[in-house]
Amino acid sequence: MLEEREIIRRCQCGQIRLMDVLIDRYQVALYTLCRKLTRNAGDADDLFQDTWAAAMQKIGTFSAEGRFRPWLFAICVNRYRDDYRKRQRWYRRLRPWQSREEEERIVERVPARNPGPDEQLGRAEQRGAVRAAVQALDDRYRIPVLLHYGRGLSMDEIGEIMGIPAGTVKSRLAHARQEIGAHLERHGHA
Image (cartoon, rainbow, N blue to C red; front, side, top):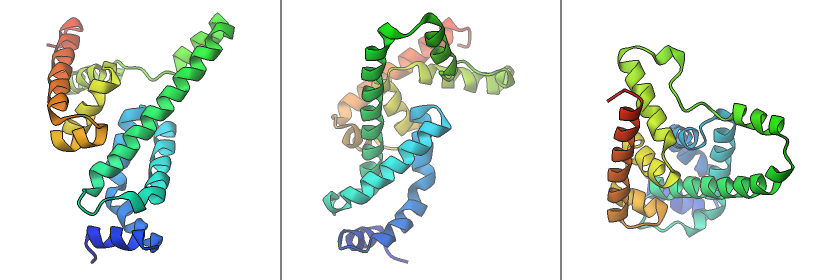
């Protein structure tokens, strides 16, 4: 079995079929991240495919000293941010022409941030409340939480992915924990 660095080196030399090995190795972790970022399956599928397509195109820029997982996650997070900004621009342009009914239909399609009825008892309720609190966070706090607690990445890796210092990641995680705690208190789950 080839080591990851050798697989990447060969992909950079044109043996792009070896990318399938990397996809097999990272598909679950990457798809989970996509799903948590986008909050729905359809957008997660698109983000997952866009991320792998970009990784295949940019494999030549990958540095041999770097680690592949943070590099791949950085591509994913950047694709998500780009798409989010694009959607926001279009929404701001179209909003003046939308009727109240159209706006309500859009709001109905937004995934609920509160725990569902199946999460009403015990630990399931608490997990649902925490999940809702995380989803309510601004992306600059939510993304580090998802990467650190959900994917187990270090602060240095998250900093590398987001293009910020590790100290800023630590600060954002601390702020996120405070916000989550406050959200739980406001909703009677503390």
